[in-house]
Structures are given as structure tokens and as C-alpha cells.
Length: 524
Image 1 (tube, one colour):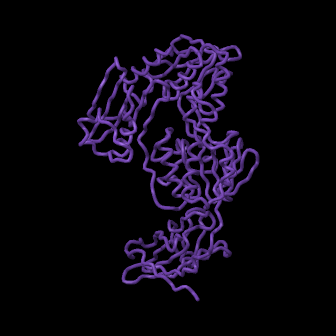
Image 2 (cartoon, one colour; image 1 turned 120 degrees about the horizontal axis):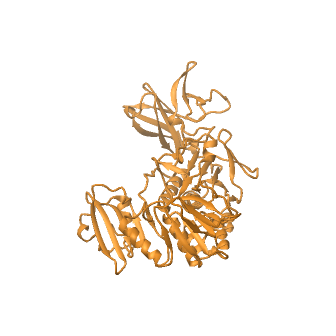
Image 3 (cartoon, helix red, strand yellow; image 1 turned 60 degrees about the horizontal axis):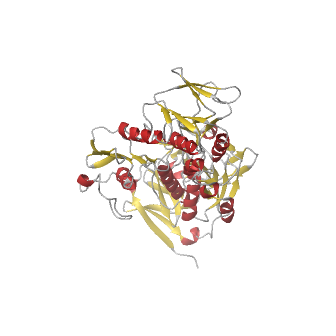
């Protein structure tokens, strides 16, 4: 016995633009609704050539007497009445009976039409095996554990590890085993194919496949780019001498520790968050460390002048020296780095140099395959690139003009991207306000928002130099805009939440600087 037809009322006819489309969910399937005059057509929303749900966004018109919709990806034309592809008659979109009744659009489906058993698993290829990529995979497995066959390509010869803990690893406060997040067994247990030490070098968007450095070819239905970032390298003489390091991965740390075992003097170029953590780690290894920074204060993007002064004095008490408002002219030495030459004519002895002068999104692969890039790979609020089959997350991404290098926004990107890959709902990445915390043992520093760009805000400040405590909050229109804490960071997570969600603080304003943060789960 056949299953009775079901009629779904979707929307009013006026809600559909003439020669425009919309997407509806019918019995668990995405259906494209396309209006032409007073007629409405219902077709499968998935483009069979790109495997992207984009037909509802296609261009509608008349081609050789046939009403057609054009896929916005590879531009094939599909007949609105039959679903047949004009360029390849062997390919068709499924169609649904539909019409208009009392100004309302309806679509009719038979349950037997959509009861096709368990569909085949689609193929997800992930380019990158870092924290943003693997957070997305974790979230996807929670949302839809059987939706994809997952293949991951990583440039490093190991599983995913916690890069946040590279600074404690350099300082000797942790070890390799403690920073590993996903050992190789984790991938095997979940049926994930992992290619370590084999980065993707080419993306063929038309054939929907990637090619690795070792020649491995993997086809995809969805592609996730998480290529990360490259450290900014100094464009000065001697930048490539042995003994000059960047501070981005575990191989950098291994090289630095090996060099430190026979070195006496180290110079860290860059007085931001990462540079100060590197300086502290090397000092704990017994080296005499000097930090060279182009600005007049350390962590100038996160701290105001007073907090930066507290931090600098604390690190100087540990034996770390600073050359502020100083520019590097060259790195010099006979075969290896031996000294750093500054533009003012002075020089610093250096048996090793660590460059921590910022990062740059890694976009070469995306550019080569024709994806739109600016400073980073351009994505929308769903983390989708200009190719509907390709998503991107992490430090390689540019969203609404901004790039991100801190963990909290990357975690949110991963959550949103996984939801869309799993097709489990609709949510958006709206950007994030930065927050950061220095990872130096015995020194507590926290910053949220951007205190250097706050205008028209009231500043609330407390300083106790003897106790080593400094707090400053910026408030505007009863919303916390930025916060800087030194010495007492117990309220850091609370302040970050107030800033991120711009909650009204009028009820707590008078005690905001001293109020105890609410217990986890309570409303702020």
C-alpha cells in the first residue's frame, strides 16, 4: 500500500520574490522553491555537480523556451518543471508537486519518496591538523557522527597538540605527553584517515579533489581549510642564520631547547604576548634574555601604559632586560647568529634569537585554487568561502574584515562551522572581542576588549603597587568595553563574558571592580 501524500504549507506567495528562490525543509530534505510570476516550482536544493545546497540561490530565466534555474557554482541549467540538466541529460534534480492555495505556497511529498534508507556517507577532507581543525571535527562528530568519511592532511608528523602550552613546554613546566590532544590512536578509533607530514599542495575545485605533497589524491564533497598562519619573518640581513628561530610549533621549541643548552645570551624580537612568554621560558632555562620591541611599552595591543609598566618591572625582577622603542637593523655572525644590531648603532650579544613579531594568515593554497582572499581567506557568517563546498576556520580566516589568533573566537568558529557541515541547524559567527592571558608562571595578566581603541568611555581604576595589583575597566552606556588586570585575575572570565555579550551592568556598576564573579551557570 502506498503512503498517503502529505501537503506542507510553506509560506505566503508574497514572501517569494518573482524570479527568486527560497529553501524549505520537507521531510528532512532541503527543497528549493522558485517563483516565476504566479507559479511556484519545487526542486531538490542540492546541486549534483558541486554537492552544495545552492539551487534556491540560482538565477532564474528562459533558455531556448525552457524555464530554467542556473546553479551559482558551475553554472549548469536545470529545467524548473522536470529538473533535467540541459548540459547533461543523464543528470536531473528531483521535483515535488507544489502550488498556491489561498495565497499560500504548498509542497506535496510522499513519505516513500524520502524513505530511501541510510544515505551514503559524504566525504569531508580537512586541510590542516591543528587546534581549529580538530575542534571542528570533534564538534562535527558530536553533531553527526556518521555523516562523513573524514580524511585529514597535516604538515607536521604527529597528531594534534595544544599550541597554547608551547610556552610552558619551553619553560620546562610541562612535557610533550601533557600537551598532546589527539594521539594517533584517537584518529584510528574513529575511522579517520590521517596523513601526517604530508600537506596538501593543490586543490582542484572542478573535480573536487586535493593533491598532497606525497601525491595522495583525495576526493571531497565538503572541504575544510584550516591552514593556520605563518610567523612574520624579519626582512633584515641575517634573518636566515642558524640560531634564529620562530615560535609557532613543537619543532621550534625542540630547536630552541637544543640551542639553549649551549647558549648564554638570547634576544627575543617582539614584546607582545608570545614574545614575553618565549623570553620567560628561555630565562627559566638559564639564559640572559633581552627583549627588543618596536613600541614604547610591552603588550601594547592589550595593555595600557600603567599595566605594561607593572608587567615590565615584574619581568625585569626576573633578570629579563628590555630595549623598547628599538628597531632591529640586522642579525650578524660568522656562520651562526652572534649578535643583534639595532638601528641606533648599539648591538646585543646573542647566541640565539627568537622572532615573535606577529603572524600572517596562510592563504597561498586558497589563492591558487581561485578562492577570494584578502589578508585571510574570506568567509561568511557560516564560515563558508565563496565556493559553497569549501569552508574555512582558524587563523587563516578573515571574517568581516578581521582575522583572529586567539583561542576563544576560533572555538566559536569551529562550533558554527560544525553545525553547518552537519546540517543540524542555522547559526552564525558574529565575530568576537579579543581577550588574552599571559602564560608566565607567577605573573597574572589579563586583557579583554581593546583598551587602546576605546573612546568616550568612563575609566574605573585601582592600583596598589606594594601589593602588585592593578585593575582598570572601561565602561560606556552601562556596558563594559575593555578590562585590564594585573596581579589579580580572578574576575577575568566574568569580565570577558560581560564584554563579549555586552550585558547591562547598571545593577553592578558601583561594585564592578570588586564584586565577586558569579558562580558558573548564573546569569551575569
